[in-house]
Length: 204
Image 1: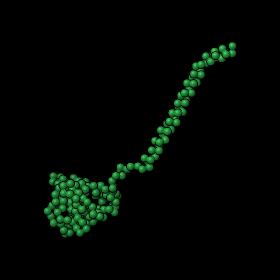
Image 2: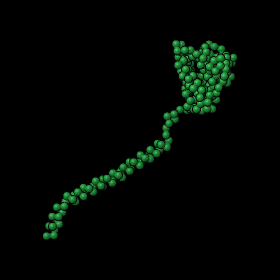
Image 3: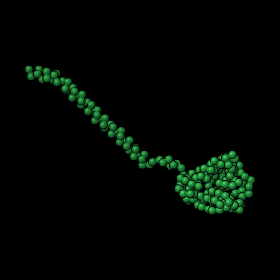
């Protein structure tokens, strides 16, 4: 009699027990899921920490010139000014100079002596870059030019114009500038960008 009553009660409340059982299963899976998520999240977080510990900057692959690795001298009508720049600005100046050398395609048959260089510095606007050690400047057509200094006229007979964009660059060592300066047949636009950059730094 009692057994029949218990059996009848279980049959009547079976949906509740099944519901509870059904509820227990999701709970089990939820707990397992949480544990699994922790295993997934923790390694990711650790990786994230390692990545942030050593950020890769945009300029990290570049070797930027320091203030001591080159000097930027600006001459205008005989007045000499050494321009102080931060490393990024030095790097931009250097890239312009590299571009002017890279596109040089011939040398000018010209004897260069100290008197000619001093005349340019006295009467024209000129940029002079002096390296602290010999640097290799490359022309795609003419090859490598080991140099300790570079002179780039911004005005005068060695500077072209929009219609005739030929410009001249002087390279030298500790003894002076070499004869046969380089000619860049399309360097005028780059030269004007370099001039604008240097003059903005000069007027700061």
